[in-house]
Amino acid sequence: MNTPSTDQQTAAQQTAVQQTLLAAWQAAWPQALAAWSRFTRLHEPLLCESRLAASQEGLSGSFAMIRLSDQSVVVDLEGIQHLGLQDYAVEILAHEVGHHVFAPGSVTEQFRLLARIRRALPTLEKFAPMVANLYTDLYINDRLHRQAGLRMADIYLRLAQDGKDKDGKDQGDNAATASQVWALYMRIYEQLWKLQKGSLIPTKEVSTEMDTDAWLGARLIRVYAGDWMHGAGKFATLLLPYLIADNEASASQQALAHLHDTKDAAAGCEPIGAQEIEADEIDGAIHPANDPLVSGVDEVRTQPDENTASSSSGQTREPYEYGEILRAAGIQMSDHEIAIRYYRERALPHLVPFPKRPRPLSPEPQLEGLEQWDIGEPFDEIDWLQTLLQSPRPIPGLTTVKRAYGNEQGKDPGHIPVDLDMYVDSSGSMPNPQTHTSYLTLAGAIIAMSALRAGSRVQVTLWSGKNQTLQTNGFVRDDAEILSVLTGFFGGATCFPIPRMRDTFANRKPEDRAVHILMISDDGITTMFDKDERGNDGWDISAMALEKGRAGGSMALNLPSDWEKESRYYTQVPQDLKRARDEQGWHIHAITGFEQLMEFARVFSQQHYLR
Image (cartoon, rainbow, N blue to C red; front, side):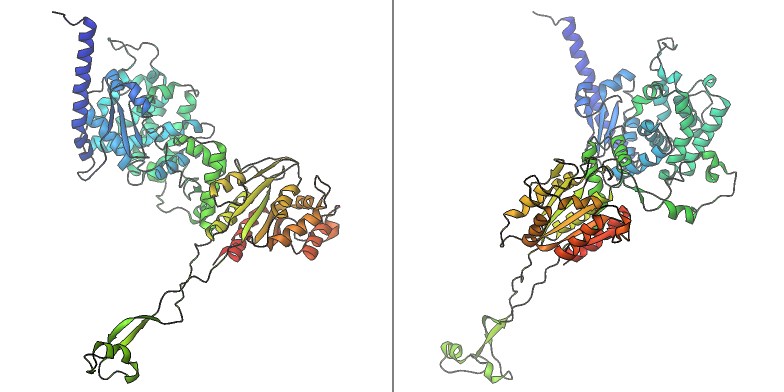
C-alpha cells in the first residue's frame, strides 16, 4: 500500500486550511453587511485563495480592495494568512463595505475627495491617493469600532507586529517604525477611541507636537463626521509636514501599503464630475488649528464667506490637473484620451437641444368605416347605398348607417441639415488642449456636437505648418473621431491646408448636402489665400469652396476690435480679410480673446442647428 509523501500531506493540509478559511469568510459576509444596516445589499465578495488569483482581479500591495466600477470587494486570503488576520473576517469585510456605502461611496465622490487632497499637498500630490485612503478609513473604522463594536484596533496592533521577530523586536526594516505618518495616524486612533497612550504606537515615537496634531486630527473626524468631504483638505494639510519629514521616501507607503484598499478603486469607471472646482475646495486646504469648528479658538462660523464662495465657484480645472485626478483614482488613460473626455464633458452643457419634429395632421379626412345613424342626426349624413345593402327596408336608428371619418398623422415635411466643414488652427500661437484649456478646441467641440445633434455630418481639419494636418475621415457622425482630431496639437508654423479644402469641394455635386465652412484661427488664416502646391490661387479655391458648399462660410478670428484699420497691421491682413468679406461673402467674427469663442460657439450653434 502506497503512503502519501510528506509533500503530499503538507499540500493536502494547506488545501484543507484554505477551504476552511474560505468557508469562514463566506459565512462572515452577511454579518459584515449588517454592521452598516440590515438593508445593505452588495453581491458576494471575491475571495481569492492565492495572491496570483488576487492580482488577476487587480489587487496588489494590499490584502483587500474595492472596485467602484462593479461595486465589488476583493480579498487576498493568502495575504490575510501571511499577516495573521484570518480571524478578522467580519472587521475587514465590514470595512470594505464601508467604502462602498459611506466613504467614498461612488466614483464621483472619489474624484472630489482626491481633488481636495491634492490641493492641500503642494509638490507632494503623488501621495494624495494614500492620504485619501487614510482619511476615509478613519471615518469607517471609527464608526465600526464605536457603533458596531468590532475589533478594529486589534487589526492595527497585528499590522504593527508585521516586520518584528518572535521576541517582538524590530528586524530593522520595519517601515512602520520609521514612518512619521504612521505614528501620527496611530496616535489619532488612540485619541479617537480613548485608548491608553502607547496602545497602538510606542510613546517614544510620539512627540509633543505630534500629540497635539493627533488631537486635532481626532477632533476633525468628530466635527466632520456628518460631512466628511469638507474636512479632507484640512486632514491632508495636517499630514503634510509628516510626509515631508519622511523625506518622500517609501517609508509611509510601505507602512500603509497593506491598508491601501482604494488605490485603484475607480479603475474602469466613466470619469464624470472631476472638472469643476467647487466653492469650498480652495478654502478647505487649511490646517485644522485654523478651523474654528475644530479648534474652537475663534468664533464659530458655520456659513462660508459669500465673496470667497462666489470667487471660486464655477471655475474649471485645466486638462492636466483633470488627468492627474483620474490617474490618482486608478483610471489609466493617455493624455489624448483624457483630453477627449475633458472637452466632451465641458461641451455637453452648451449643446443645442435635440430637435423636435412636428407631426402635422393630414388635411384630407380618411374613411375609417361605418357607424349607426340615429334619429336626430343630420339627414344628409346617411350613407344610403350601405344602408340599403344591409336592408331593403330602412328602419331609422336600426339599419341606417353613416360613414365614419378620421385624421391620419401626416409625414414630416422633411428637413435636410447643413453639413459642417471646420478648420481649427493648431500653430504655435495656440494652447495645447491636452495640458491647458483651449477655447478653440472647446468651441469646436460645442459646434460639432451640436451639429451632430441636428443630424448633420462634420468634417474637422486641424492644421499648423506645411504638411501638418490631422483630419477626420471625411464627413462623419462619430463624436469620438471628431474630438480625437480637435484635441490634437502641432504647435508649429502657420500654413493653411489649401489642398484639403480644394479636394473637399472640387468634386462636390449639386445633389450633395449643403456645407457651411467654418474657420477658427487668428490673423494666420490669411495663408488660405496663398497659392497651393499646384500653383492654384487660394482666392479661386476659396470662391469655389463657397460656391459648391452652398451654405456660406464663417471665420472666428482672434483679432483686435479695430482690425479693419490698416494702420493696425504692417501686413496685408486687413485688406485680405475685407476682400474675403466683401467679395466672397465670408462672415468674419472678431474676438479679442479666445474666451469669447464660447459665446460665438453658443450663438453659431443656435443659428445653424437649433430647430
